[in-house]
Image 1 (cartoon, rainbow, N blue to C red):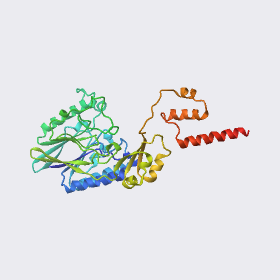
Image 2 (image 1 turned 30 degrees about the vertical axis):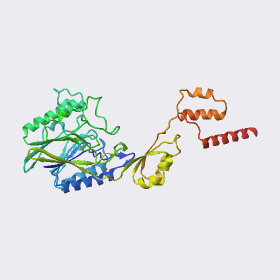
Image 3 (image 1 turned 180 degrees about the vertical axis):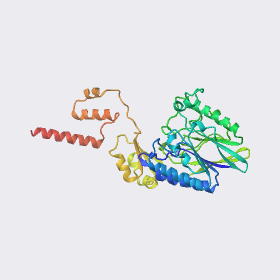
Image 4 (image 1 turned 120 degrees about the vertical axis):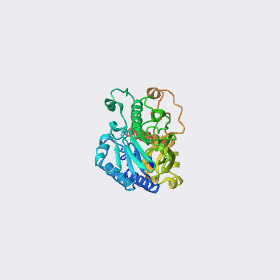
Amino acid sequence: MRILHTSDWHIGRTFHGNSTMDALAEVLAALTVQVQRHEVDVVVVAGDVFDSATPAGAAYTLLGDALLALHQTGATVVVTSGNHDSAARLGFQARLLRDGIHVLTDPLAIGEPVTVTDDDGPVHFFGVPYLEPAIVRQHWADAELRTQAQTLAHAMEIVREGMQANPGRSVAVAHCFAAGVDATVGLEREVRQGGLDVVPLAVFDGPDYVALGHIHGRQQISERVRYSGAPLHYSFGEQNKPRGSWLVDLDATGLSSVEWLDLPIPRQLVTLTGPLDEILSDANVAAHADDWVCAVYTDAVAQTEPMRRLRERYPHCAMVQHLPSETAEIVERSYADRLRGAVTDPERIEAFLEHVRSGHGATEREGELIREVLDDRVRAEALI
């Protein structure tokens, strides 16, 4: 049996205020072509289908179009909910979906698999939706479920009971933060409390393959436990990480092979670092005018309207940061101390600029303007 493992579509998410709906639709269309080309039997979507618990109407339309297109390839589709999704909203239409599309959001149904049969017999797919301990512990009063790690461990015990009741090959689908992963700082919404909610690899013992979601970058925890990552880049911190999915083959005895399939990247991401004039140079613009741009300019002094200037050259500049390459040695003095040492008006202005600019005073041109303004004031006062 051939399985395609994808996750973290995050339908409805924006990229620095820009809609990603069209780009995601393009990528999911490419994924559907891969499903057809590789004759995939089952597509697994491991959570965070939506980016919000209250998705907009357009997000439902995109999801419906994507599921229908995947179903029309002849593949069975198995979807679980993640920590971004509302299980109720994602699952409300599950009973209305046609045969071959399964949305698994009910924690009480974890041990009841979706079974797909090939020439070698049945393959049982166990969907584990994202489980918030405070919400689901009511279902298992006898279990200690204080952390998400404990909760997922309990869920996997239920999966193994389901495997005993349903002999054959098996695949588990879950959404969590597993031990050994390399997360993108500030991107994946935190589901840990300190280190308590990191799920040990041993929790996933049993199934022939475990399809995980939550981490946005491709990860291999073991040969049979993997993250596919998100199909789009949602942060500049991810810009060098590939986008795609895992193509998983099961033979009669279990896991046979796993292959990575790259997905197209509708718009490349690039971080340009250096003085602002260098970032705005013709050579840089020629190379990156069509990219999403994060500009990190290193001028000693903050520049005037940097985003406006950048977007005149880079229409898709999404982010600008000021990170001076040389930080002046800051003398630990209060603003009052600085003013006490200033005698003339130019010195007082210089003390103010040094205070608000972390030690950097006026530039040569700024100094000329300050002197002109002060001279104009002196002349005006002389005429009174």
